[in-house]
Image (tube, rainbow, N blue to C red; front, side, top):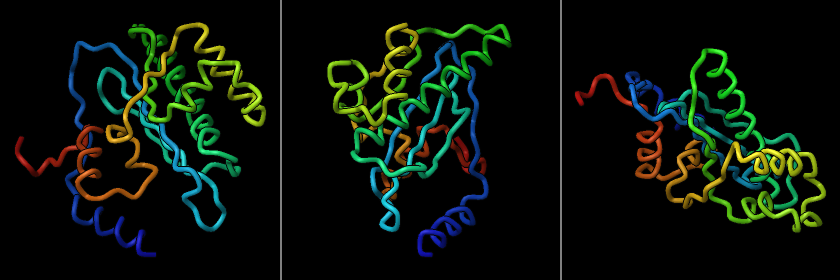
Length: 187
């Protein structure tokens, strides 16, 4: 209940927060994905989150508790990685339908080296049999070179704002990187 009260206080005190869309020359689609393994003390399910940027502007975001318990943190991260890739592919197709091009490869920024290693190295297959469908999907996408997965340090992972309870300075940093501004504060 304390978390709900904290969220309600934040919403009440920030009525002017909104997204600012800026015109840029960057024609990129970028996603940040993360998972908070076993955060829930009740059912031990992970919380997954992603946010995607089209041409430098935040356009989609999601935070959701995973439907099954992950047996390891890499598995939880691997599942959310496939969700982020699906979102990027969908946005690329939407832009294509609107006759807009974007730079390739698409980028999925990630802070878990184990999951990146599994995605890029089929030899580790025995360790990931329980996430077989996601593994095949991610491997196929990486082999086509339409998406790359660069490592990003956890301190720069902006999607943490959707999956973890953060201290105020880190929360404010993530919110500003998402492109949220206060319309009542002059820029």
